Length: 355
Image (cartoon, rainbow, N blue to C red; front, side, top):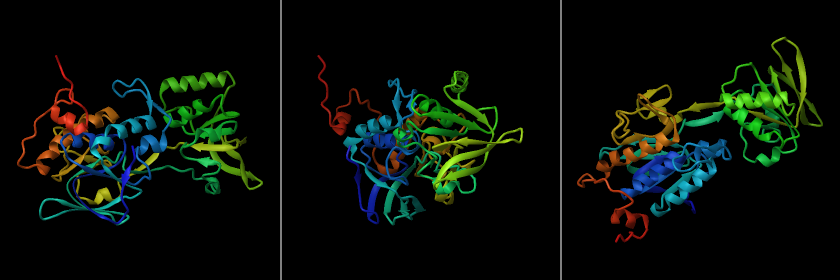
């Protein structure tokens, strides 16, 4: 799909603004499109796909219905293909800074690049909000960020044949450490304690590979660095026994988790609970501000499960919940894409002929 975007700083009057271009935000475009509601999509990242693509583009996902396995990038590509008939407009690389209710019930929305909107509804699909990887607080390490020190993997090929140290004890650290075994020259997993937050199967596989001398596990904390010829050459690692050892490396991958920040969202008068947006009910996933909906990982309600699947369900109901704001005099009927000629027309497909 060719991403339709506009020059920052313009003005747009629309029925719906979606904040967040991750999988749930993209599917929100689809569900709105079926109801003939056109949407503009805003994301602070420079590309669509959200956290799925930004942090784990090659990591397999196994719980999307009817798709046994796909990567974050493949899921994003499929969703973009699915929403092609609805021609959404994307505004990337800019953050929503202002949301204000107008006297006529609509909203004024403005971004960090000066793009302005008047919209009848807003859908917040911002994942964990504006997120940044937690960085390593070791003196001098920042000089090597982007050359030898990385907080995400965008190009796995650049690590092949290298001596790699992976820091962390969660799924990301284990997944990438296991991924590079057999591809990198050597893999060392460095974690501050014996307990791991990763999936038990991944931990068991890692320990087996260590027993087979195919990778190494070191328990300790980075206490300093060594350089040679203006390059990072070694980590100083202090163990629980107080002994400091030197670990040589070419590349350092750090996975200490994300630091989620709601940013300007926290100033829009929405009910917030533990950095998540509370929804009034699970009938339409509307927030305490009428006309503003929250879908995906950004929202919270009793029984909430942070799954892409759950976000898709929420997007469908939110679209129906928003329709009365956009079509106040129109009764919205539930229709099925399998049998509805109207939806076939909206989707640009031919209606099947049944004998």
